[in-house]
Amino acid sequence: MNELLFKSVLDQDRAPIVLCDLSHKIVYMNEAAVKNYEKYGGEKLLGQSLLECHNAKSCEMIEKVVEWFKKDTDNNLVYTFKNVKLNKDVYMVALRDDEKNLIGYYEKHEFRTAETMEKYKLD
Image 1 (cartoon, rainbow, N blue to C red):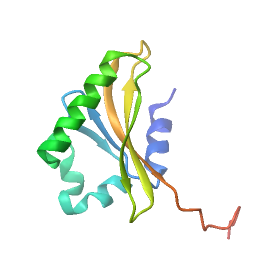
Image 2: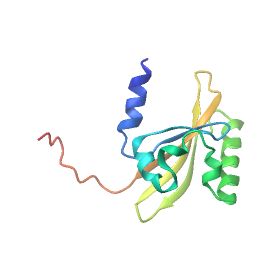
Image 3: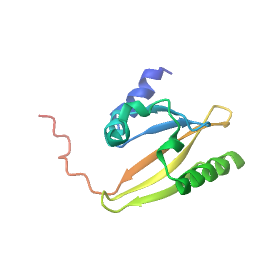
Image 4: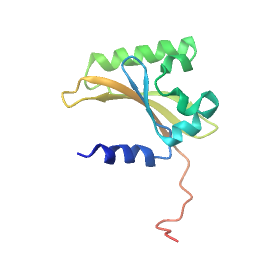
């Protein structure tokens, strides 16, 4: 498949997407993530450790989740946070290769507020 198609899916998502490798290095941020984390450096976060952006307790939990992902190929999604103000749930999601080996993880935001956009409004 064309990698540009997959990148476009991530880039078009309105929710922040931050991909990390197993050393916790931030390897990709979509535009929504760059904007969302602008006060922390935005695009400058690329290549940095995700652990540098979190407090000690959060880092401990991130490490625990990654270890849980490693234990079983069915361990792929963990609910991590509820943001009441923005009405969204946040998850950590395992990234795996074709052989189901863990290769990284990302943070997934799911907004619970109903869509206000009109259906099929094209003009």
